[in-house]
Amino acid sequence: MSLFTKKHWQRRHVMEAFMKFIMRVSLAIVAGALGLILWIIIVRGLPSLSWDMVSKIPEGGYYMGKEGGILNAIIGSAYLATGGTLLAMLFSIPIALYLKTYLGDSKWGQYVRLSLDVLWGIPSIVYGAFGFTLMIALGMRASLLAGIIILAFIELPIMTRAMDEVIRRMPIDLEHAALALGSTKLEVALRVVIRQMLPGITTAILLGFGRGIGDAASVLFTAGYTDRIPTSLMRPTASLPLAVFFQLGSPYPEVQQRGYAAALILTIIVLAVSLGSRWLSARLNKYTVK
Amino acid sequence: MDAHIQVKNLNVYYGKQQALKNVNIEIPKNQITVIMGPSGCGKTTLLKTFNRFFELTENTQLTGEVLVDGQNIYDASVDVTEVRKVVGLLAQRPSPLPMSIYDNVFYGMHIHKMKKDRKEYKAAVQHYLEIAGLWDEVHKRLHDPATSLSIGQQQRLCLARGLAVEPEIILGDEPTSALDPISSQNIESRLLELKQQYTTVIVTHTLRQAKRLGDYVIYMYLGEVIEAGPAHEVFNNPQHERTKAYLEGQI
Image 1 (cartoon, one colour):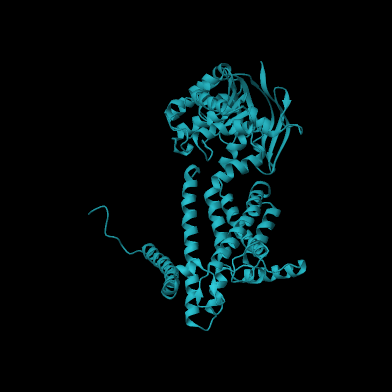
Image 2: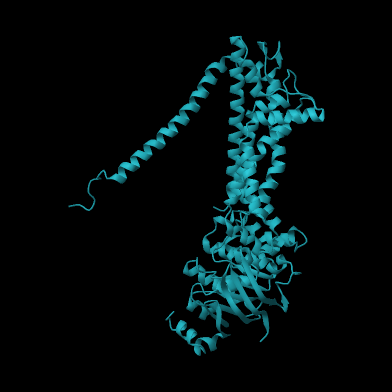
């Protein structure tokens, strides 16, 4: 008799096969849905995608117009998402480091995390309405600046919590090594924790950016919409999600098709930013301690 | 005896549990002191009171004094970063910082602003890598990640990094226990070379290492110092039954 007999289908083997099956089905559902979305956007949007679409502003109005392009929305979205992300970074990195370095798992730390989680879950339309109320109180008009600020509000909890989760996984030995050399806690945070966590922080920023560039409801209230490219922070601006929304809402099939093209452009921008940040985080990964 | 560290009536508690019980010892200057004893006897805790590292654990309490050069490092006026600059630590497992080999040595000198310009820093990095016996192996790849080194090389890098901030005291918390025999031997011979200039305190659980390195020996058991004295006296003529039993391998 040989040492290894033919595999018997015991309970544990059946269990493994079953679980593997479930995991594969889940993956297939998600990948399939994504594929389907991409497929619809491409099939319906590609025919309308032309050089004019990305290089001209709308002719004949964004709602009815069949001519021109959506450069106003592309540039508007780039301003909005970049501005919102930078502003959110300015606050979320210090908050995340403060949470890690000084609050830790204390009661206050838990309270701040809970608050951020609640903020994360609030629908963007609520942020939009909040921003709108605030603007009225301050006597502000719909503007690029208001859009940037409200997007920063939306991105802040996502970025902070994503960074927090990454930073919490920081190996304690590394911190101790830096402390043993006589570092202050601030030096540990700025010179060691950030370096170790850069790839994770990049991912967190990307998550925030992705939410920012894709959000329609909040900018509808705060940044407005216009056919023009914004020339100052105080002017209203168009955005890609709203370009999709308005054009899809049009009764003309040609304009609807332009809506799909706008969606395709938005998807390509998100893809490009994701790939770029992946490349960046792979480079930043070089020195991190595994 | 010319004492570099004096410990007076030291008690340490983790929560309600007492980890150190009324410890009174003196650590001689420019010698290697070895702290030994069975697991859980408090030897690492004692070591960590010398650079105020034990207070990184939450819910700890300490009474008594630890004097370095006659000054109590637990005095409220003492800056803890100064203490840790003077009292360096070589940890159980090497933990290089997430940066290049060069920057690992540069880091400590830089935060303490110890040199004037780049040239001086560069010379100092080379100097300390040479002392740690690592220069020849790494001088061609100073800008590679520190994690690309072997574990033994990493520990020597940590030694260079620790020496670069010009401490007076080196603490070693079982500094060779994660290393292979050749790397361990390498670290041991570095420590023996350095003992003329530094006061060294090593925690070890291997008796043979204690005998190879120790000039002065502290034997601990259940949070108490049972016996302390010059190595030849403690090893050849232990005064206490427990020490005798430990040396004979009964514990």
